[in-house]
Amino acid sequence: MAPIAASQNSRVAPIKSVSPSRAAALMACRLSEAFRAAGIAPRLPTHPKAHFGTLAHAFLRDAACGAFAGLSEAEIRVKWRTVVEAYELKLKSDRSDSAVVPLVRTCEDFEVNAYRLIAAAFRLSTAVRRILDRTSFRNREVEIEGASTDGQIVGRLDRITWEDGALAVTDIKTGHVTDIEGRLRPELRVQLLLYSYLVHERFGQWPKTLRILPLRGDTVNVPFSPAEAEELADRMKRILATANRIIDNVRSGNVNESELASPSPDACRFCRYRPSCESYWVARNAQPQGGWPRDISGAIVGIKPLGNKFHVIEIRSADGGMMVVRGIQESAIERIVSGMSVRVCDLKAERAANVYSWRPTSFFWSSGL
Image 1 (cartoon, rainbow, N blue to C red):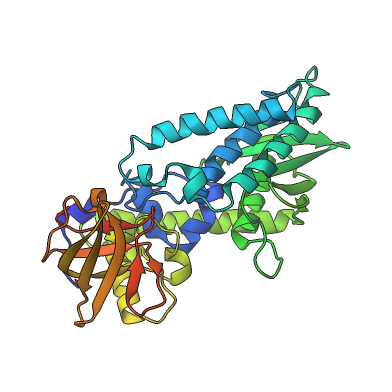
Image 2 (image 1 turned 90 degrees about the horizontal axis):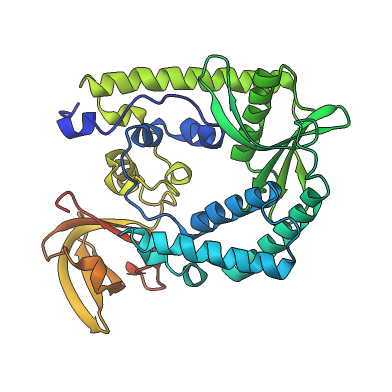
């Protein structure tokens, strides 16, 4: 086994609890969650769609809480613009995420989804207005904190309501809730099942209904059984315990952090830690045709200006192959010099072999940066 760098030992920390929204990520790769627990800043910028999801989720939550009750759809649209402007102002102060501003330019279908969001917020506001004078749990409850009795599963539920004498859990989603075959995405089912478990832990009874309220399309009901939810909760607790045992060994220097990793194209595709994750690069180099994210690595052999503060960079890979990255803004290469070994992530592939284009979410990483 290769020697373990001291800097790696501090890159991971014990995972305090399982969040239903992060459960599938923990199942896919324990290392990324150990990075999160240690407070390691993600290397890759947040994807514009994730920014939209954060904005939209909070906006719908506010609508469900009655923040827009009595407002017209046009007035809610003004509220949305104000929220977006304030959010983007914060993004501009972040070195990596500032590249995705304005979101209307970098986030695919931003305007279309914003139109759907405003319509959904108006519908929620209209419904809430009819029950604003009812504040007890049996009528309306929004954003409930839930935790298992042992504290190992902790999460926040979007909405719990009392319907026809039984509990119902509603989770708001702004992205696609089904896969290309029309089936509920597995990670969402995991999340909803754990929500049902938390409801049982807090209120002593199982919800009768689990549903997802998507930004587009009809409400999706998620059938489940209490036994299934309990079995999943027990499994997540075992995964958590195993992960923390390994993390303790990594922190003490007995094993490498790679013992926590489970690199695969699906697990790594949306991981923002992959630029500095050695397990990821070892796995993709071992299986280069595995459908990995559009990331490259090698030594810079040329930096050429294109005009208008854009550049082209030539990179030689470890096997001697040449790769070209076009359209790089000058601000992205301020500390990049010829001869430097780099990893360049989240590129756009061009038609020509080994030719790529820079995107707002693309990122240079080097141990020297």
